[in-house]
Image 1 (cartoon, helix red, strand yellow):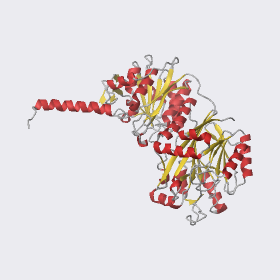
Image 2 (cartoon, rainbow, N blue to C red):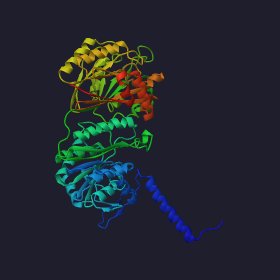
Image 3 (cartoon, helix red, strand yellow):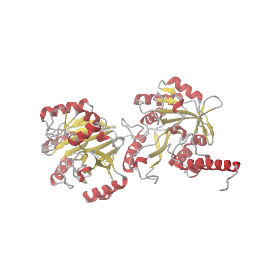
Image 4 (cartoon, rainbow, N blue to C red):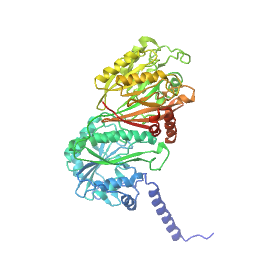
Length: 599
């Protein structure tokens, strides 16, 4: 074997190393690789924008389309996931301005580094277009005016939410200096609002950019619903109390407050997509969605905005209880945290009593269920409202029923309906909409009370959602009693009907323009039949008079509801379409019903 001379060998090592690093930068286009922090000539930290070179960004800008905007841009929302570098470039190409001298860039604190919930830096960033300097005067002034802010440089060294956008800022805002801020989601609504207002008042000529990706780790059919709620919130200038399924609610609250103070609340969306839609992955665990756009002067959209996630039967006894006692009371919910976030309110059916009552045999008819209070304490973290209008609420008698109602109230869980009555209904604000929830247990309650409750709520101009417990167990097709009751509820003034009890899914139909979902199936249950392990939630979004209803399938695997893949969801949509009325079959295949609500 012939050996290479030492100098030739060294040269080849350097070539291989350089080539490897270059390829790594291209391969990791959607990832973040950082060089060590250095010291700028003024002794401030010098951070790296990453390994991507100027060609990477020039290629992104070459794919960008320019969107003409005659009004001054006051703020923007951009992704930091470099998988969509061309869309980030398009956003910056559209909003870029040589006359802007200060950019406030806000990112989530992805790694929870540091002590404060809001942190600011005096560092600078090395980018392929040169060093992006920090506006030291603006940083010092903000520190003096907001006690929540703290200078914590260690939090910025590897924060890709800041670093990823610095090359775009340096290229599109060549005369701007940076005010970098990162926030933790523990920042309260009040704190975020004060910070956003303070930034607007202290730096009236600054342009604020929120660096945030949207939905994470979910199939596209769920991410699309959550992003639709987020897009509506952006257009309305506020989420009105909901927790959006995004990188950072704190960041968006700061953005909303900044825009409100500036009077710049007109939202211009440029792009909505996801890793799955781009073909970058088929694995929901790797999915990230993206929303990019900007705001100009003017008021936000006004009118109705509310969003809900409605789920089916929740049973926390029997073998579900055994699993919780072994693995923790959060066990049934572990795969649904992000699935159940992203809307104003989550509603489910509470299929049992709560408390330390002496347990009966729940494995034999009539299957009396009792849940430990610890299970409902965890439930309260995921579900806001429950129906008690079902055939198991009274399993342990009147005293236990009253105790259950009191326990739910003490846990902050609102409830409606009872074992033998559609009253009381629950009237509450969801977003900015007055909603009335009416429950009905077909097997004990009087339909006359049901109709009266709906008529009263409708007469008060409330958006009436009926949640009946009805039908034949394990039947995939609604029986005649369900169809008759549905017609009565529509005639009485119900605006939406979503049912449960059969333990399997049933289809949907429209009755006089009112959507009726006959059965969502189980949400948390332990029945052995395979058909009872499949269910769907209904995502509800009302924006002005437009009502969108999203079908969100899942499977129960080892007592844990779990989102299905987009491929399996498509099969479930097809199955539900076959079970639905003829006029709805095409839209059910798409997993979404859109209708116009006529108050």
